Image (cartoon, rainbow, N blue to C red; front, side):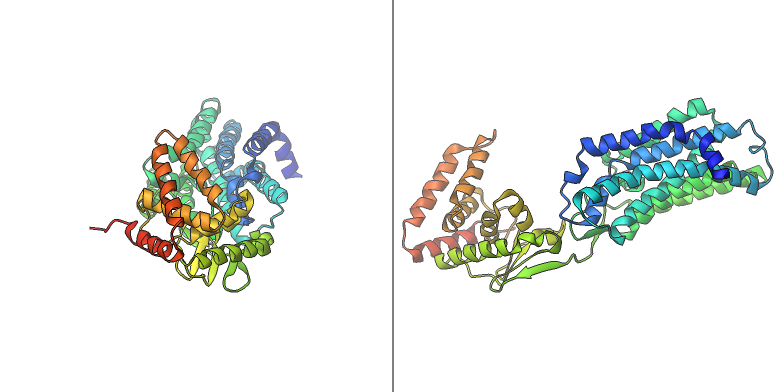
Length: 426
């Protein structure tokens, strides 16, 4: 009964329609369920909560300020009993947390429902982290509302929290974005945020909220109370900064070994189980491409062809025995055969000579029946401001001339070109 009374008198009931409308607006205008997710639950959840955290946290802080303002005229503020103060504030916090948690849970539930993907424990950990951060911002809001008139503090803290999160991604001080707890980076297939990614924002924002809680507690003496609060903030801020100071622009992730589903032999074709519904089709296309290129004599048949999606953001190079291609993406856009053919090309460097590399790619595409697909990409390059139509014509003439030679000469040209495509490193 007390909870229902608190809910009826809380500001939450009046602002909840606006808060939920913002969530739904951002969810549907950004078409969250249509973002690439690879059938992987952690990616779906990260896509859903990415744009929502800033709104939920700003709402938590603003409502915390407003509710604390209601207590200023009561005897709660002056109560010497710590338990009395925290009991009343905790009751006021529950409706706020229910609303802000709903702002996070609703888009996640919608995304999982629309994609038909079941949540996993690993996928829900970032959601739990952002829900805990809501608690911290409510406490911070109570602390600000204790000292500053709520009509001034409410819009001020809402703007500060929102822009603290949003503008962190525009800063070249990468540590800032990692302390917000917001998921600006996509979680790719087979990845999960590391424990440090989860815990560091909790340490940073949690230390600030604890300091604010100490600030409006009745603990005596006053000097000791504020000294402890300052020590807590300093320790949490410096400790969390020490953890993230050397991180790059993207958050650290760990590979969780997403399950693969394989079919066939010589080559065996493997795709993530979540996107393997077209595995038999891909295996047929792969066997055809391997047969064409092996018959041309330039490459040996690989033992395995695997989907790059399983590598996450660590894009490994193809080897003689294992070709790596974006099979799932290829199925989605209809060029899986072309991607498999391009995976057969192996250079000693990441930036081979433009003319040599494209000549080899055109020869490979032609031998595998994908000449039109590669020429289309060359035409797109020509259409760019830096494109060179004459250069492309020379590449095409060179490849046509090579293909007019006997098979043995073509193989020698191929192998020599592969060996000379990369400049010697000094």
